[in-house]
Amino acid sequence: MSEVAGHAHRVFSGVQPTGNLHLGNYLGAVKRFVEMQGRGAETLYCVVDLHAITVPQKPAELRGAIRELTAAFLACGLDPERSIIFNQSQVPAHAELAWLFNCVARIGWLNRMTQFKEKAGKDREGASVGLYAYPVLMAADILVYKATHVPVGEDQKQHLELARDIAAKFNLDFEAPDYFPQPEPMIEGPATRVMSLRDGTKKMSKSDPSDLSRINLTDDADAIALKIRKAQTDPEPLPETVDGLAGRPGADNLVGVYAALTDRTKADVVAEWAGKPFSAFKPALADLAVQKVAPIAGRMRDLLADPGHIDAVLANGAERASAIAEPVARGAYDLAGLLRTRG
Image (cartoon, rainbow, N blue to C red; front, side, top):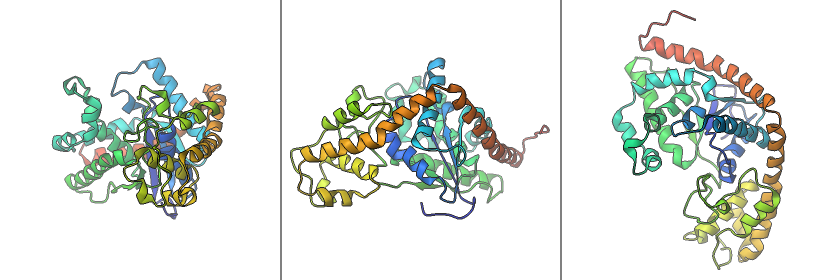
């Protein structure tokens, strides 16, 4: 995102607290969040715990995961003085606006959401209503702050399009053409979609049964180096151009990771390593990943040793977020004709 002036631009994004934050989450989301701080836009980053309960959770484990994700945010460089960091359930305006949006969104729109089909699998009838409707809550998450820009991965772009549709229909239905903005997606960088280290055709995932498929932000240096050494590639050397990565998913993935960790393009990396074997490239990538990722685990451990500090960060963030969100939700309720005589 180019530098913007003032707070007419507001960036919002959220991450689910489902444990085991990995390199894909870092490169595709959190690293970008950190880079957006101080670039002229107001930034809000949310632990979306209401989204987490769309599937069964153990309450004690969920509370721990909320704190762990917050610790990861802070360990990666998010600054509560420069960004608003909070968890969704402490700001009731998210759920309040989501209900209005449930009455604006159309069943046909939700039926087209591909992620529900993937997450529900074969047991769609047994899935929760929350899992089906969570794209509507995601729209509320964004629009309750009248966010103008949303960092998303390719797999979330469809949900942002839904948020834009809901905003437009709400504005039209209630004759308020400028009430909600049309948020713009921010899909940038060489590694917005990091793939499994064991199968370059599949996205890196915390749910993959093989721990070798991902680099966790809690991994130590030895674990990181081992996983890079064992990562899928092929016998061919690195190509001379990016086009030469076509049809080589494992190779393409590692080049993308190297590029993202060094803030360069894939073309830059290929130009540097053209013709060299992966037996030389992998150790260099392992050293780089250890240098960039391993310190995060140490900072996370220090932060998690003081849960009171994490809770204070979330409480302060929720108070600041509520100051923005509650008037927006109240205004939307008023436009919808709902009578609210308190506050």
